[in-house]
Length: 295
Image (cartoon, rainbow, N blue to C red; front, top):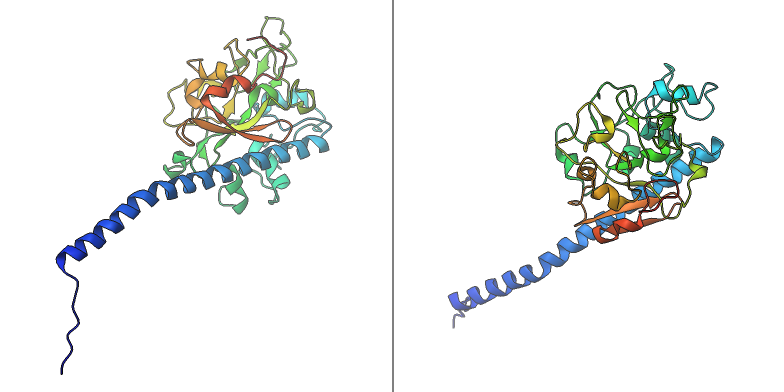
């Protein structure tokens, strides 16, 4: 006697396909959430490593962290070249390059995009890393800028920018005269930055040192570094407000906050070394100005 194996009927096959489709529809959102959560955790780890590196740098430089201002302003504050670090050609290193040796990478003259260590500067949820060229703007010795670098995190320019010793004005790039909320007054009545003196931050556990930053395309003034939303810097510049909420509510500063990376949240690394995922509703709790202020 011959045996015949009975195959699936069309109805049974459709039922199986329907069950598989239902399971996919249930599991896929959960998998996507898990993937995004893992990316946010990696991003937070990156920001924490940057803060630890900046603090190690400051410990070796008598409380000074690498400035983010242009070389021409920085050298006035560092005539003995003890506070900041410089390239072999004598020019100031950008803040990211200055931190690479404190992140376990090899020393570089400029930001080295192909280094494995450069991954710590990149948020895995940053869509601007898929552009060509990828990344955001770093300013140092640049008029107006020399291109994009794979950096997803903004440094606090109110801390890391310098004061022009001849005028008393806070200076960032060639065209930036700063006005930092709550800062000591220049002769013209504008608030001065801290010149990189990390040890003098008023409330380090509440003050941003690094955070998710940078969006493209740029909609700000292309020649004024602190107004470019594609440049990785946080500042209270001319806003009259001291918190991240103030930055969010200021028309020339708000576009730099990348709310699309982590669904209306950003990862913030504070000056004391801890990291938080901060929702848009809690921006008022994050200080940008390193000085006492009322808001």
